[in-house]
Image (tube, rainbow, N blue to C red; front, side, top):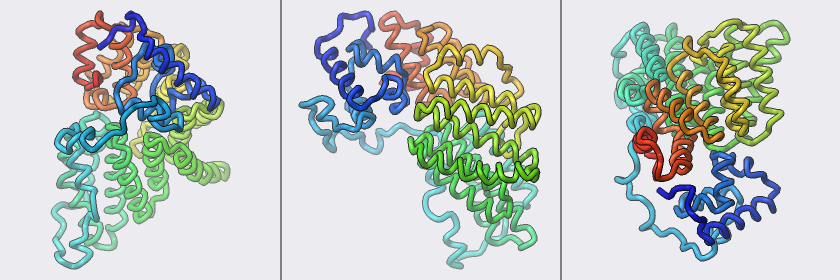
Length: 420
């Protein structure tokens, strides 16, 4: 790891100037280009000044993709990657949700559909409901390995049950299936498995429609929007969110939207705010936060309808997250000082601490950033160690500190695999 205080290599300086020229030709600010890479403006500034060398092929590819050029245009003479450069399947980093990912591959109950077998339900709906509640508890606690292990039996049971249960219980069974897929989508998103989250969210929406519960359809759409944002499909995220927002807002204007419905509507505004923030649409992002805040005031207190944890506190946490995404570290830190998140789940508390850590990293407050990230790790270790933005912040702190990086930071970087 090279300290930032070293003399800048002329080759790195020339490369940084080339990146700067390409960026300006495209009318992008450093902040906007960094946002396309889900990185910080300070990191991009270091690249353009030659302080931060860019040597790895995957980072070169990320910059090239963000600028809309080829790697060769970005750095002439760079050899094309060969098959030998790609990691072998056995070298791919394992994920806590690998078993769950395999579980949703293919049709979940093809044997039952074909009549190859027709098993009897192994559990009552009451027992299955308790199991689904447990899955959500584990998800809110960020215990994704446990989520995956519990789903190994639960998800096949639910997929069989909805197809063989008595008609009188069918809606209730489909609702349990929808809630399970929503939890799985949330878990996949938090482990940056966004493509799998998309699949899980789509199945959640389908199951919710089968259950005749339209609000759960919208809750599933919220999970899909989160997946789209992490896939950088911001146009799809906006479309999915706006479609549900317009329908729910129409019910609200007619005085027909329940308090639970307001929670869903407010959550969708928060998801849309994140999509706008990722696209550096500042005014639009702030407008969505304001709409969510107004709904939270009407809802009153902190609720957990549809496991969305919507309420005044969660809106405040999302306002911090939005400020960090927009590069407004000072605003994020000011907002964060006023938040007491102890009434919310460990996942929400950990997310606030991660975002405050990122804000401090943007300000180069290494001690404060490290403190926040370590506290987040105590609450939700699996999330901190797999969250892309948190890992980038940790890596940036190591670069800032260079050879003088404290052992606590180096230990966190190693646990999060943030040194590669």
